[in-house]
Length: 301
Image (cartoon, rainbow, N blue to C red; front, top):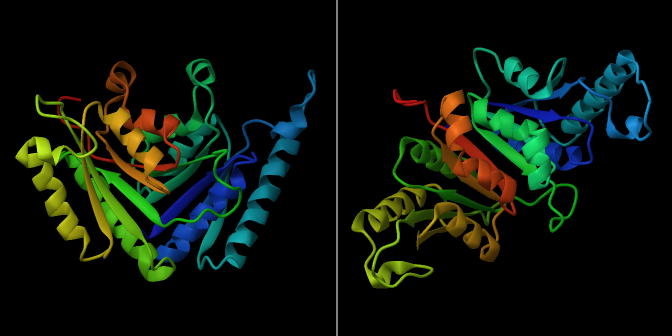
């Protein structure tokens, strides 16, 4: 997959620096153009620390406009060859989605503050809403206490595969992104290919090959590993058993990972509400950035 057009959304929060640095690094590595978005939907947090404060809309718009200009200058100074910005209005998630247009970018980068479960339930999440409905891959950059602020190091990538169309798209994106980073600025790039199999009567554990997992599971990661080695010399494969989200999170806790790439089936709005998504759960709980690659909805969706 070729990454030629990147879009990053910022909102004036403390997470913006990390989100912008990630987008700049990926734009430099891939040679992609970069568009910086912001939605003048509400005043920045420092303007509304006291109750009954009425911030004029023009003041909010001025803040976002100056922020965008400053961010564009920083991106140019960081070595991004083609960069521009766009100020949006309206509900943040919908404004971002509407701005993508008939020809979506190759990658959308958004931030997430990692709200508590209660706040996610009652307030929702712009990043989750964008991931669920965006017509392009979305990289969610969370504010993580265990990670230092500023420019993150992107060296270790992982991709979860299961043989589905969505995971095929995810694998191609992870492989090509790892290859671009390796060629551009990260010679020691590593790619891990993960698959999670249903539990079976044989002994379970970290890697159940001794217990004889289904042959198609180990064959899938073997084939993909061989394919990826043509682009990324250092490729690791892991085969797990059990609940997919639990096993993937356990892997991330014990294996340094900067970006986890997962597939999403591209469900219809109704099925998204009723069924939920492993990819959405990983966005909220993974200790790293999560890149969600979308497959077209099936006829049943």
